[in-house]
Length: 309
Image 1: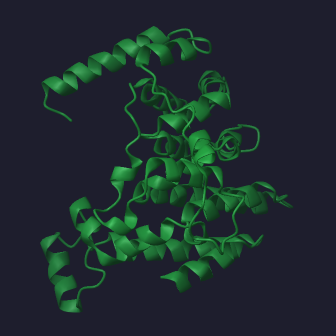
Image 2: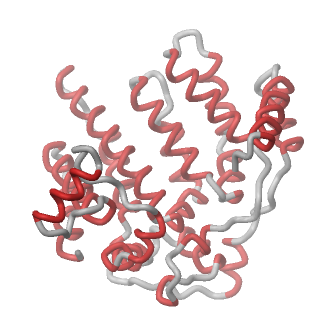
């Protein structure tokens, strides 16, 4: 697994979009082997699996299966160090892609398509390895996502995908949400929502994001998302410090040594906010926030009545 990740990271570090796309496909292939059922079955068992699934081919493993899978556990373990952390390399790739100057409309389309593929893979990586979300407690990484919402340089397909990545990055991480607020993320998203030239699908994505933002917060639970193994357990404070040191450690160091003061700084500003508190903040940028909150609460009541969790 290390050799494949090393090869894919080498391609991702290129300024050639062809090599970058190759690196993305290599990581996608690795994750497909881990997440899709039947990948390590014999041909006869794969055929029986396809027949039982109505010919649909390999299906996704259930979460309880994935957590028991040795390959997934090894992937999760490798993500705990900067050297093999996929999300960190994908963020660096996005920065590099944004710095490329298109020489023609075709080249610009290629760059935008590669950015979209990188964002899609980033979202999947954050879902598979929740501790990587701590990277977005950093303002530079958060600003990178917000820059990709700029309608001047980014097509609607990329803007919509960025909104999905933002939801994943903030999910269960109030510290990341505070960083989003500090970076004027609310102004960016609401401006996109209110913009006359904003594509319909982007407006819908922005509205869905605002509903998500207004939901009440719970204390961070990232550390409990890891598979049940002592190798993968890390305290929240240490993961916070890991995000704060993402660029100050070389790839040769797989474990971070941080002092108590640094860990305290990494845990600062993590206070959760209620819907009412966030309603006041959002109200500075949007006039009908009360209606959004009312809809949110009504839907929550209906979901509870229907037994939806």
